[in-house]
Length: 412
Image 1 (cartoon, helix red, strand yellow):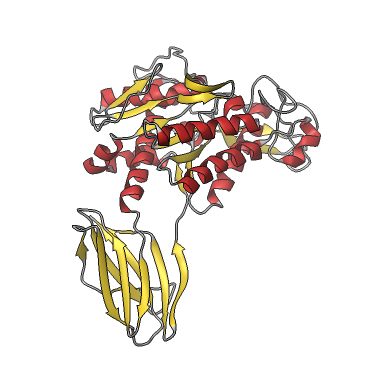
Image 2 (cartoon, rainbow, N blue to C red):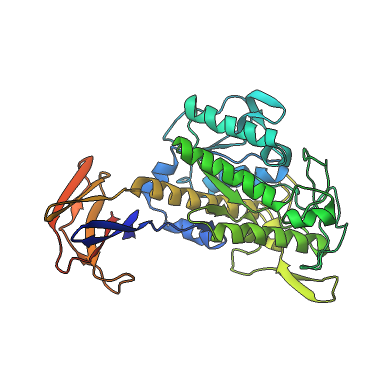
């Protein structure tokens, strides 16, 4: 059973008071999703097979695509087509489509481009404008884009080693690259306060703001595309690795504080092995305190046969398959959310309450009520309705007592 697009109203003699709408919550896709992939039903797998997913990035982003190809070999239910050049494949229901293809990039206003760095996603206003243009093009011209997230490379750690001033809160120095940023390619921290330490106005909040802008852009224009947040590689230790860990935590905190953001936690997925073991390493900060944080588990640096050959994504095939499993689980949740997203409307007409909502074929809907929220129990206010019509209208008498809360629940 799933509560779908809950709308709580209070029925009063003078009308209806809207209390809460949506009751959404963030979707965090971490190492738990790797196991949950086994629970995806065939109907949702088939729905995901109609999706095109774009995860633009540099070398590490290849792990998403390689993982999907390997998972398809291990389990043919998860069929996929990876496109690495040219025009992205048009709509199909035969397999998931995944690529890095974007319509234009920071240097090109048009044309299908393959390969995105921080300079294309978030370090400048031009980057944000061009990524929005890509979202517009996919909506208006196609192929329709189901989901998109930035595939981090070593952007949080490389090119500029830890340096600058020591952060007075975290007792660490910052590292990373910021190609395309206003001040150039410099190390960067979490927020604007770190500019004094790094000399760089680019920070993790810059990434968060750009990604949120894409999410808002899609919502404001009615696009089906879900733009999701991501964490990045975890193949560094020491001070470099600890400051990267803090950047990942900054992303996680932002998503957890949101109403309904989506996070693909690439980092957490790779810090756990298939046997359920997490790798934790330590580093002594500039105040002498030992700090513990995650790093990539050794198993995820191995290929399926137990050896390792560098193939461009800087992780092993085992790690790539874990990414693919988690990605399929995330997309199944998005498909489920998309299918079951129902707007419950209610109005007051004399001594009647009139509820209306659109239905989806094959789903069963129950209108439930309670006297108090939060409630220990909800009770059916109407017999269940099977979604075999576009719109369902239910008419009920104003309740006695006249204060009552309603929600719509749907299930398959």
